[in-house]
Every structure is written in C-alpha cells, then in structure tokens.
Length: 108
Image (tube, rainbow, N blue to C red; front, side, top):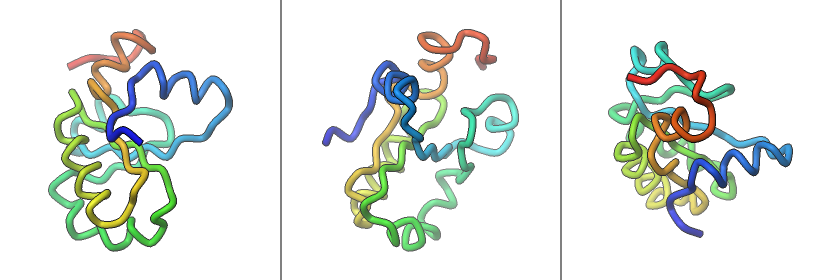
C-alpha cells in the first residue's frame, strides 16, 4: 500500500460511503481555519508521545493530512514505523483538497 493517497482517491472512497479516519497533524490555529469533517487534531509535534496509543490498532487505516502534504508524510511514516501499516498521507494536503474536491473550503 502506497504511503500517499490522492485527494481524488479519498473523495471517491467517501462517495462510496466509506468512513475514513482522518488525522489532522497541523497546528490548532490551522485546524480552526479549515478542517475536514470528523478529523481528529493531533499536531505533528505531539504525535511522538501518542504513537503507542495509535499503534494499539495496527490494522486501522489512518489518513494523515496537513496543509500541503509534507508534515502528513512525516506523520504517516512515524505511524508506519510504530506498527500502523496502513497509515497514509493525503498528497497535497487540505490545500489540494480545497483546489480539487471542495472549492468552498477556505485556503490559506
């Protein structure tokens, strides 16, 4: 399984009724500006102390996202190293999502 998932693939899965587990690894001020529905906020700087907790369900698919896809790629890598084999990063982040999937979302 590729570590990145495209916004098109994620949107298609949502359209098919799949429930995706979103992990927003941006800072709280970014989350307040815009976030995806049902996303849990866990800033990247706090992720290392929560890795063991997240790794308790190693079969879970967790899709990490940030603004442009760099922090989320780091987060997905850390999660995979901790045993969450299906951790993924949203390529292009929420900015790509706003450009391609939901233009009503604010961009920053």
